[in-house]
Image 1 (tube, rainbow, N blue to C red):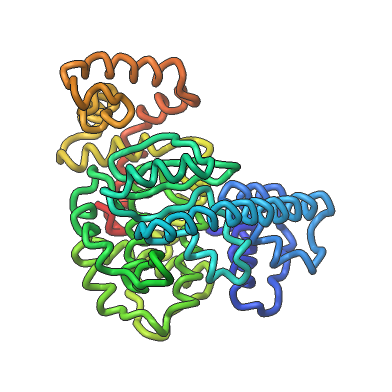
Image 2: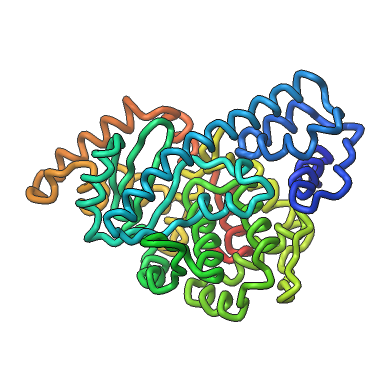
Length: 398
């Protein structure tokens, strides 16, 4: 059963949307758990807006929420200052770019500074990336890394990911669908775009699903959908959304997210009837599963490795043990295409792949933090992995 502490947390978030009577503090509230959960899920700054006038919590707890709120506001101000410069230089050089995810969502939050962002995401054309590298260097950004779907730059606490495609190659169906991303945009000004309401909603759902299939996803990602529907419900063509979701095989997962949005935050659409697929038992299981995650995944236990073992077993229609072997093998000996961004010499000398494997193995064993937890989670009990996989099937992710 969802505890009164977690219910109070959900009600506090809902209050920021509807601005009704603030939620009543439960008599058995666990203040330590209340704050820790909010912090781990990147929503403590938002929650402060709902509870700041009630003075229902201990002074020390309120100081922590207040501190997080002010830090979120400060971080947001710093990010926006530098982001403005980036957008200005992209527009000056007529480089088309699409704002998405956090930068779009923050504009529809009750207060924009509520929406904490770990990074800013933009979609750009791949052929513009060399020019973008030059421009970002000129305005003081440092290039950090690249993968097959984004290049990362950092300056003064602002991390920007320039996506040359929306989904990585390990999700081929999703990768193929989102190849048409630039065809589903709305011009905001000069060379700055954002996605259509339907396309962006579907991308947000696919992004949450992607996180579920790797390191998990937390409360804030579900609250983002609540905020999105609360703001844009009258403008969304849900028949088109359903059409997109069918192509991505995510209709059942969408129904799951929508039901959580309603049961957690009391947000529902006036434009379509949700398909309620969660019985009470499954609802509890999914909720507890998400609560284990932090903002970007399994913050404490990193159980994403256990999930990955199960997904490998499912893909091969094999036992958990064989899935575990496949996952360990993939971790130790990834394809050259997965390593060529980190080890540039593989582009011209693919025969040096064994050297790249050796370096990667060294980093995994001796440099990677939480390696003991990761190893332990790879060897999570088979029955526990099966339980997670059964839940994934029930919500449409397998």
